[in-house]
Length: 415
Image 1: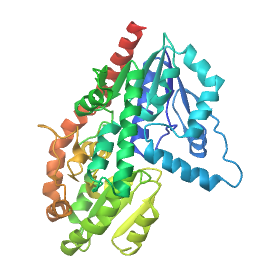
Image 2: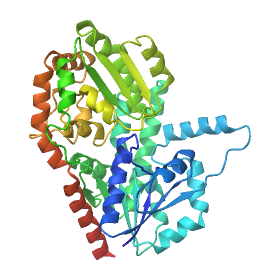
Image 3: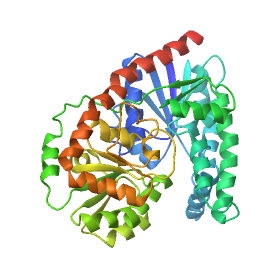
Image 4: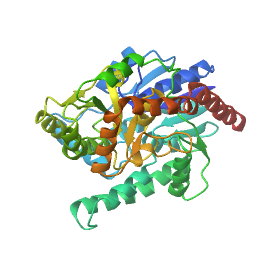
């Protein structure tokens, strides 16, 4: 089958965010099933560098973006931040204009048997795809729930933050409904997200649940050396938070951790170290970290997260907003690392079989959970290792490949 895969990023080995890691495995699964894949993404410095490093079996097409006018780069960047703030479902205008003007993109869509859109934003282009090609959108995040939570947390509806939240919710409701009704199938990562898609689309949209392939075969002793180091670490251990910090949900969680959770932990475990691993940390994060350089590390972009997982006594997921399955939570579980999280951080993951070491939605409760794991690292690790096999089965590569093959077999039958 000829599949065109439209995405904001080009994945490569070691891409430092979970969504990109999922997409890399997704493309490899399509290639292994014999599909002819063309990846279409916006041209950017990051995507050009990623194309040079990429090992995916796919033709990679980068769509040139119009350059900002001379002297207006900062103004353009500010304008695009505002576009993402108020219209988060839509790609920014430069990307929309580039795709609309690209005859190559139109030709690829016309020749495809199926066109998939990775991340809801790229589904904005689905209406350009004509019959008989099937249209699928992989909704990594269902944005309606995020927008509703942002409004709920905004306080007064007439405050500046409240007004922004109300406008954003209105645009998300309209734009996300358009995306989901423009495609033939919506793919989500949990049953909870499937229910939100139906609510966002205001109809029984055709939704399939595809559990992401986040579990490589991991032997129980794969990180036994790290476990030994964690158990015997004097005076504390490493608390890891992984995220792309240009996403506001991660930056907010990081600042909340630095200001309210970490100080509580340090009063009981002064030797505990907090590591914030991921690209694009904010200036505010760096300033807060510089106040306590002996106990906080902000890494910035890293080539691989494995060394940070190997050193972690636990993974902290202090998210207060957002939606969708949090890949960082699963990444910790399939590695047998204790998880301390908010309820948002485990949505669509924790059930009767899978559990976190500790759950709380306030700073004091999260700090208590972190301290409990540091007080008894061997016990925390035993709990995590008990969950590991079930997590590995639920999010296995084999299960994902079977589901994806079935999705595209059904797509082929419908064409």
